[in-house]
Length: 329
Image (cartoon, rainbow, N blue to C red; front, top):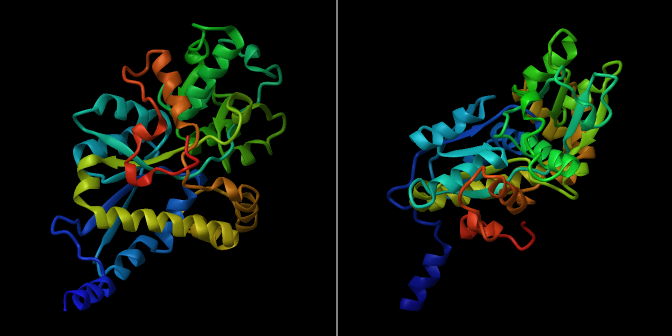
């Protein structure tokens, strides 16, 4: 009888813990870097995963061009899972050890990045002067800002990592694109990702000063999905469903770039047509991945230059153990 009951139990859907949420709130920013999350949203993949579990789950999406809105939302309990750049996540992780306790779930891609300039005199970062302004999501708090500091140290030596900081202007990528295209803004350079650099490179005189790979060889995660230890521990079913839905979104991107482009354009406001979006996704296909890459190196640099007080000893320190993968870094 016991053996029979165990066999029946294995066939039943998982039992939801009593504390499981009925609504999960996910915060992301605009742009194709969030393609997997846009696909998950448009295709209702998390809802379907929950339905398969017999879990009546409502999903709310909060989109903000201001990353601090997302981090503050998680800390205040108004957002459950956030997608932000590595530096914002690492800073919270370091500050919250033993209090807030935030940890990573997965990456959402390792897309290329480019520093574009419309100043004909700028060919390397040595050519920037006090008259130039470099737009990026947030000085000191975005992956673009950290990469520029790494490149400044590489160019001018130890202790010179912040040499370009006075030129940095915090702007959301869509706003920086408008500023670059207008030609009237003081912003004449933009460190960004696709599809924004694709549009900027169509401008007469616009050119690439450097790429992300010039600074950081190999794939580098451009953004993190993370949550609090409390939400993770109290909602194991929701977390499992979310992680599975992320894999579903990645699989669709890899298998059907046109469908992924349609999902993205249904939610995005960028002026990119379906054919161009499909081609961008096809070209970057394998860079849409959940494996975290380079996060330990970024956190180590941030600690060395005094941006965080606590350093991880390995990348796994910053992730929930159930999301460790063999080739993470």
